[in-house]
Image: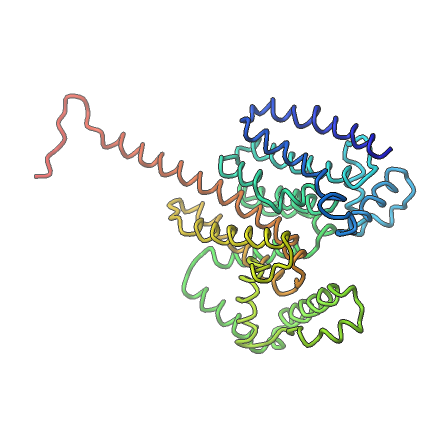
Length: 398
């Protein structure tokens, strides 16, 4: 019976939304085909490529979303991650929620919303469109019954206001639902903003002060109360997520504790920050892949790493665009470092970093295109101003 409901949902998604978007935005055939592939993947994952219990959180979201639609759950659940996410799933205008595929179709609609929003506000370029359509992690998490697409949506909208419109308070307000959905991601935005505001006026004195602060924080964190509290909190998160790999079976955790590396101080801490920043970007490494799924993720990580280097090697001439890229790199550093320090599981690492990777490249590609247009405008103005008037010979340099 659930299959019939999924057919009705699919007809709604395909005929009403997908074809409507393809027609209204006059999408090229290849983009239409890739979007259709996103719909197809929904039915090729759960209970086909892997059992639905491989990611058991999907069933929790499904059950809670059904409870919300059936009015069999109280408001007290909505301030939790599962409750709030399930509320968002339940109010989405999909006819039926009867399977994990139903929630996956909602996530596809969120993906489509981001795709349309990008075109509506003129962020769309060929690079941006094909990155969204071809990025494997985005394809995966927009085809599962998890909350991550809601996290991406609110982060994306908030950072649009922050980066493009430069409306910082409004951007933080737009991203505020992430406080409930994934609190640490909101803290990463705030941390990136603080780092950006400090670095954007690049004066030697500022770097000296930052260097002294980093030195004190690394070597004697107990002397800085805020740093000391953050240090203790990160260490608590790290060990909690280390234990989570073993489902909090404390007997097993105790046996595996010898492989746990606590946060150090001084040069050890600085080394850990650098190591885990890069490791988060590349995790899992090719020789760490335990199955084909992880091997694909490893190849994806290597490609993303090369793309980050390529993007940052391009010379940017427009000052304001350079400042926006500085914020993007601040966000990348803060998010990858914090996640790298606390996340051990390979699957969780890919899941935690993919929203930031999507945001990074969508806005970076748009800014690159904007700088290219700026350079063309400057060249055009220069050529017009230096064009000799009709009938008048240019002054000879001799």
